[in-house]
Amino acid sequence: MRKAEDYIHSSSDHTVKIVSGLPEDVVAMLFGKFSRNPKNLRDTLQSMIDTGHLDPPELAQNASEKAREFHKRVTIGYGHKSVSDHAVIHFAVEGASAVAERDFTEARLIAATSKSTRYVNFSEAGFVTPPEMYGVTAYQNHCEQLIRDYTLLVPKAVEAVRAILPFDKQDLFKNEKGWLNATEKRGLDMVRDVLPMSVKTSFGISTSITGFKEMMQKRKEDDHGEIVALAHDLSNVATEVFPVLATPLSTGCSPKFKLPGMKMFDAGRGFSTDTRVKLLKSPDWPLVEQVTGVNCLDLVRRWTHDRGHHQVPARDAELAEYWFEVIMPIAIHRDLGRHRMMTQLCSYIDPVGGYGCDPIFRSPIQEPRLIDVFREREIALKASDTRMEKLRDFGSDALEYACPMATMVKVLWKVNVRELVHLLGLRTTPQGHPAYRRVAQQVATTIKYHDTWMAVLIDEIVNFNDVLIGRPG
Image (cartoon, rainbow, N blue to C red):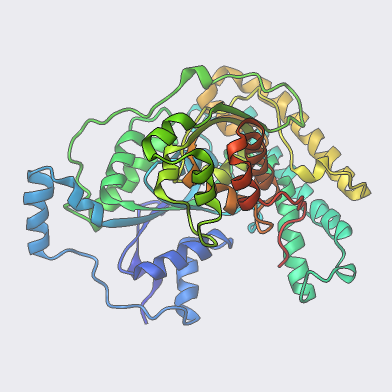
C-alpha cells in the first residue's frame, strides 16, 4: 500500500505542499476533509488511505520526454501559455498566518479551501511573527494573550449555546452526539473573531499552471515578508513537480493592485460596530433593455419563474451589474472572500475601524451565560486595543498581524445578477454561518430598497429567516 508521502511534495521546512498523482475527485475529497479537521494534509490523506477511502493508482508524477519537449517548444518557446491552462496544480500551505491565507485565497482565478474556524479549535495553533516584528516582546505578548483569551472563551461559548438549545427540548437532532457536535461548532463560531490575524492556519488552492505562475510572481514582490517567502517556496516545489511548465515565462509582472484611498476609513470606533452595506451602482436597465430587446419586467420574470430549481438565470442576466461597498469583520470576509464568481477589491485592514461581533450577541436572548461571554469578549478586545497602541509605529502591514479577526475591513464588490443568484442563494441558507448569512441578507435588502425591479427575484432566492444557531448536526 502506498503512503501519503508518495503524493505530497513538500518544501524543506514542510510549510508548503503540492499534491500530485491522485485522481481529481480524490483531490477534491482530500481538501474537503482537510478543511474540517485539525490534522495536517499528510495525516488527512494517510487516514483516507488507511480507512479504504481511496484505492491509490500508480504514480504518474513526471511528464514524458515527448511532453517536455512539446512544452519547451510551444509553451516556453512560442509563449503559447494557454496550453498550460490545462495543467492543474493543487497546493496546500500549513502553518501560515491568516494574513497570508487572506492574500493567497483572494487571487482571482482559483478554487480555495481554508481550515475552518467553525470545525477546528485553534487554541493550540500558535501564531506567525512577521520579519518586522522579530524580537518585539510587545507583539509576542499581544498575540499570546489573544489566543489565551480565545482558549478561555471557547468552552464558555459552547456552554452558552447548549443552554440556549438544550438537547432534551429539541427535535432537530437525531442523537446526543449530533447535538454535541453542532453546539460545539456554534460556540467556536461565536468567539473565533478574538483570534489574531497572525494565528497559524492552513489553506489549499487549485489553479491552472498559468494562474499559479502569475499569482506567485505577484507575491514575490509583496510588502509582506512572509508572503514573499511562501511564494518562493511554492515556486521551487512546483518546479520539482512540473520542471518545464512551472518555469516562469518572464521575470517581470504587473504589481498587485492597491487602492490607497480605501486604506483608512471611518467605521466608527467601537466594540460592536455594525456591518454596513452601501449600493454604489445599480444596473443600467434602459441599456439592458436596448441590448436584449426585452423589457425589464419580462427579463426578471425569465430569470425567476422560467428557470428550474437551483439553475442559474440566462446569460443575459450578466448584463445587469451591481457595485457594493461592504464594511464587515475580517472573520466574516474570510468566509465570503473566496467567491470567485464576483469581482472584489479588498482594502487593507484598518486597525482603528472598530470591532464587529457575532449576531447572536445582538439577539434578544437573555441567557446569562451568553451575556457573560459577550462581556468577557468585549474586555478582551478592549485590552487588545490598548496593547496595539504600542505597536502602531511598526506600520500597517506589520500591524495587520496583530489585529483580532473582529476588526472591520472595507470591501468593494462587483457582481452581476447571474452571480448574485448563486451568492445570495448559497449564503443565506440555514446551513451557513449566521454571521455571513446576515451580511448576505443585508445585501439582498439593500437591492430591494433601491431597485424595485429585482424585488421578485430577491424574494425567490433569499432566505430571510433569522437563524442564530446554524444548521444542526
